[in-house]
Structures are given as C-alpha cells and as structure tokens.
Image 1: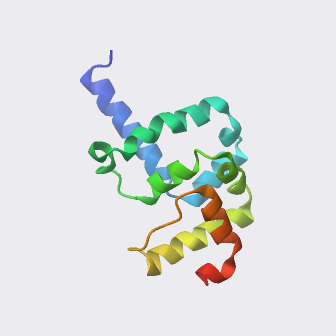
Image 2: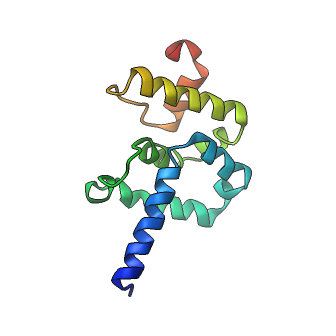
Length: 124
C-alpha cells in the first residue's frame, strides 16, 4: 500500500508523462527507442487510460495528450508515428487544429486519423 507521499509522487510523475504525450515528436522518440513495441510499455499505456476519467483529466493541461493516449492503444498509430515524415504530418495537423479547429471534433480512431493525414486536401 502506498502512503500519501508516494501517491503524490506517483500522481505527479504520471501526470508529467501523460502531458508529454501531447508532443508528436516525443511520441516519435518513444517509437525510435522501441518503447512502442515493448509489450510492458503498451500495458503501461493501457493502465494510464484512467487519466481520461474526469477526476484525473481535469489536471491535464494539454488535452491532445489524452487523444494521443487513445491513439497509442492501436498498433497502426504506433507504427505510423515511428517515421519522421508521419510525425511531421501529425505535428502539422495538430498545429492546424490549434489554429482553426479548436472547437471541432477530432478523428476518433487511428484509421480515421491516418486517412485524414494521407488525404492532404482535408487539412489544407
């Protein structure tokens, strides 16, 4: 059983990690380091899904982090983000979203996300 200091530290570490997931280049680095192929790491990403619950999500400053956490549950996206060309495209789409679509829905599955990335006219 964790004491309150250990729980607080764990909360802070997990929150910091979750927020790093909002950066597509961080995701690319995880892929390059082979973390996104490690079953233990993939299980950790599944475990972190509890951060989507309102009582935890309210602490997340970068909502894209939770969106990318969802996408990372899918092997297709983990493979997709592993190349710098695809990461650049994801980063460009993220910037476009911040600039123009902040109140529009985002693709809900990795297949929709990837097909939007491949269909340039959707975002240009």
